[in-house]
Image (cartoon, rainbow, N blue to C red; front, side, top):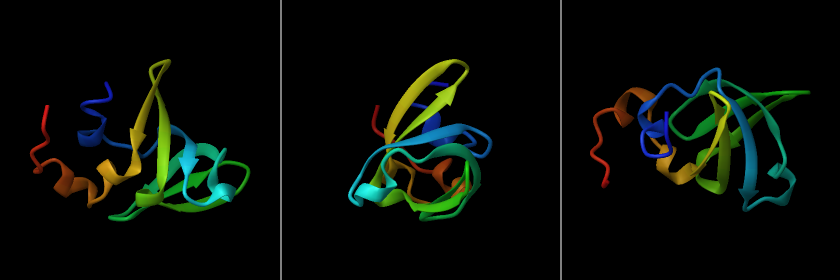
Length: 88
C-alpha cells in the first residue's frame, strides 16, 4: 500500500497517528482505527476517540512503512471511495 492507493484500501485495523489538526488537542493521538464513517475515524488507544476526517492530517503505519495523508482525501463512505476517480 502506498500514499497514492491508501484511499482505496481498508483503513480499519491500521495503526494511525494524528500529525496535524486544526484542534491542538487532537495532535498526537495514536492507536488503531476501529471504525470509519463518512466523516469520522474512530481510533482506539489508551481511550477511544472519534476524529473528524476534514480537520486532521494522519500518518498510517502499513507494513513497516509510514504513510501520511490529509484527512480531506478520506472523506466519503469507504465503499464509495472506490468509485471515485482520483488524479494521479
